[in-house]
Image (cartoon, chains in turn red, purple):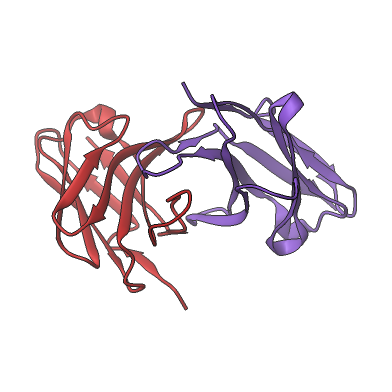
Amino acid sequence: DVKVTQSSRYLVKRTGEKVFLECVQDMDHENMFWYRQDPGLGLRLIYFSYDVKMKEKGDIPEGYSVSREKKERFSLILESASTNQTSMYLCASSFPGVGNQPQHFGDGTRLSIL
Amino acid sequence: AQSVTQPDIHITVSEGASLELRCNYSYGATPYLFWYVQSPGQGLQLLLKYFSGDTLVQGIKGFEAEFKRSQSSFNLRKPSVHWSDAAEYFCAVGPSNTGNQFYFGTGTSLTVIP
């Protein structure tokens, strides 16, 4: 069965910390995505990667960076965490193709910044 | 600019009743359209998608959706709702060739009463 695994379901960090969210997929997908989900705002794309070491900014990349050193792993980095980054973070993956839409999602990481 | 509107924030239906969730989009050309479902505490699951061809699309879990170009709509339907269908539903409009222009609606929360 296909699987996208996010390393933590819940995470609590302090303002100013550098935070790493990890995502691993076992489907050999080229595309990987990081989304942020907030009530009333739906899902907003932070970053998208279509290959190893390749990345593109989404709608809300400010305050975030990403790393994709291996095909199966896509990391989201909060350089200096702030309280307005408290949110649910969702990772997704897919094969390239028509639409290039995110196909498989992880269960999410609920991040709280205190 | 692309956008997706889900006018209903929350819908309550009785088990066994029919369901229709509304989705309207704004897009310059023929869009790629998608519906996802998010069960509590989980990531999103792709229910169905429309790229071209037959405007009535069948998906998983007994769901279907109809693309109506004249109304810029892609409403999701199910003839008989089950208690397990209680979840958050997201409509999305996708890009033609890149993953970083994929937009989600704000979601519709479905409650099913016995």
